[in-house]
Length: 68
Image (cartoon, rainbow, N blue to C red; front, side, top):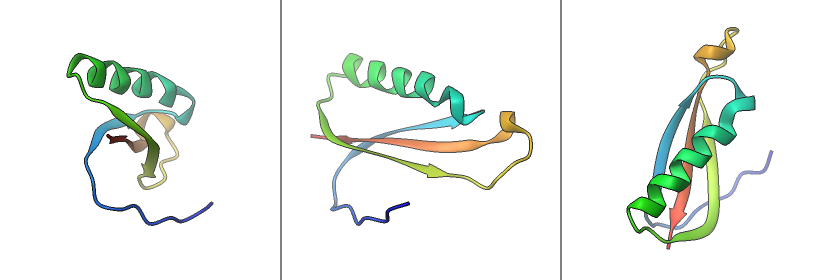
């Protein structure tokens, strides 16, 4: 894992609830929302993982896309 510091700026956010193997679905929805809203994306994205759950359906991951 690599820790980085991001500068100030705007980002689009989505909360994914469920197994990590399904993150791509929430990313697709977030990208589609940004397109519909006419938002330009920068090249950065990041994830923040919630507390571990033994039940994968309860895992929470915040997804962020940096806006240009």
